[in-house]
Length: 211
Length: 277
Image (cartoon, rainbow over all chains, first blue to last red; front, top):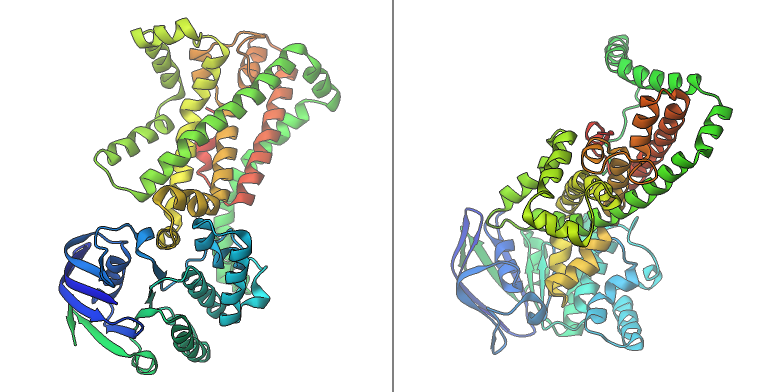
């Protein structure tokens, strides 16, 4: 579960004011809003990447407001995949596992599993240069899923993809969410995308949540 | 750094005249540089070059130059990587002042840097250091004089490198379980590899060309503090033009190699700032 309680946060001159909402465990939440409405700021605040002026962030029964991002156990997929340029696909997928000191065999097993889910097997030994936008997004998704996060935050992950790839990714996201049983908060301003994926919809307007 | 793609479309006659005017105006400088190098080459012969480079003084200067430039480069990176990252990623009280201070050695007249070093080592803390490790008019003085200028260029290169890198990848690393330091080591630094190589090459080339601060602070004593740049000065002062040109050509060769490496690694520094002092 994600619960946001009267959250205030700044991004430059922009301010999120008194934002509260709740997304129950295992559901797919879609957060919509115009460009500049504060969607990314909110997602960053949930992930621990942005300083919160006041309010609380709860994950399950835990108040994680003062926790560093590493401790929150949130898988984050930004708008641009932000893959690590020096790592091969296998190392990208295993990055969080390596940080957590999983054994080599456990890492390999989990990476293979994730690669099968996302259709990345043929790419595992490749460097990221020259991969398509859709492939990069699938790798970013796999990298965030590999350590079995309790929450997945997706910041417009499909916005830069062509229609065909976007449709395929939409289907993939829905099936992956069900398979992993993870709670997902997905930002988009594409109503079709929201309609296909959302169990719950939230609208952010001028720094406030409207249901 | 990516270059914009070059336009290779066919040109109209007006376009041709425009580009020809640019080529004439700007190309004259390129012609002048080429003329300088050709004049140096024409003045000497391979035999002269070989004989000059056999002299024990010049061989000592080559060895000391290689040693001091390499040490200077390592010291510059030691400072430039953390400072460049800090300045690129954080605003902190005094960051503007630090930024300004780091740039000062790039704009100060080189002789002033040497003089300032000389004065610094006449103060009480300076004299204390001198009692443990002689610096003034000694090899450590050569390295310190080179470092004071080279480090500024390395810091600027590293800062630009980190500024050009989207911090999102480091933020993702934080959510994947890294602390700040681990995100730096595992993500930012490997991604900045080309910038590090460019900063190292620039620091090395810059310290090879350093002259003013070395002359003032470390002197130009044969078999003691003589490096290639001071060799040119010493050989000229005794009228041995062949040897001066031989060493100059050696430095030109090193500079060209450094520039080729810089281009390869993507660092495109202001070459006006990278020339010998």
